[in-house]
Image (cartoon, rainbow, N blue to C red):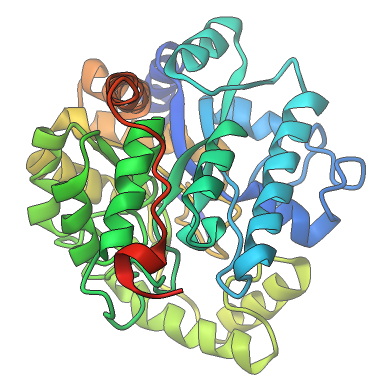
Length: 404
């Protein structure tokens, strides 16, 4: 598959200049889990200083080519891991991100604050932040939430694909009707800590409840516009319209089944084929990808492009405003990607498409860098204020929801 931009050379040169000035802050990259699955976290076996395009969407050369200045590395664990197993696996993911930064200190800098992000940019290094994907990682424990924050996690995605006892997922049957009382307490404690409340993956009612409860800006680390592609993983317009009042940022994803209506049915069939062959539908190991490619060869998939992503960003800008959008590609967490956005080197293709559509350099700088830095800085400011009046919560789910 090929992808071509109109007037590509001039647009790409201009796009790369934009990214030199305001590099990409990407909201979600699943490299840590891919490294766990493919190499047991062994950076000797899968060295990111080498070309890893046959195995991964991410390596050092392609991060540089893509103009990436900051990355939220997802410390995701699947929902099949529960209780202590989910917590320990999350700790292993955090340990890998720290090992990654230590292995390539000239390329990465661990970032815990907005100031750290700015310092990394000034040094020419990639600010490396962490986001935990799914509230099962805290095992219904606010003390565990605080421990993850102390280890450097700067957002928690409230759910992944399955409901929690205290929050409904976008891709499960409604049970709580949004957030329970304990779920609201999780949001309040995140506000007190300065941990961003990430509303990707959650149901629309959970989004609305979180926006009602939160005292700090929220984040959507990798979600697009439901009005453009009617998938439950995307953000309804009434929620996007609340972001200016909240101060939050919605980061558009590149996953084809979330952005291209024609890809939804095809992906459902591909997922069923994976399960029929004994694979999890999210498996991106070489064996899993071989199964996916065989299915794709027999049943060609609808292909998204940077223009598909740009359609979402145009709509999100119209509804939420330019100060409330960003980019969250979901690299190394999906089997398929748009043509032209095949890996982390592809961001200039998206910026070139937006330039073609008349986006200004100032607007592009907000999209790529300034909005994401600002939302973390604002969450930090809220936390400083709350910590003067509010003690760490010791509430339990049994006390608030009457369940263990």
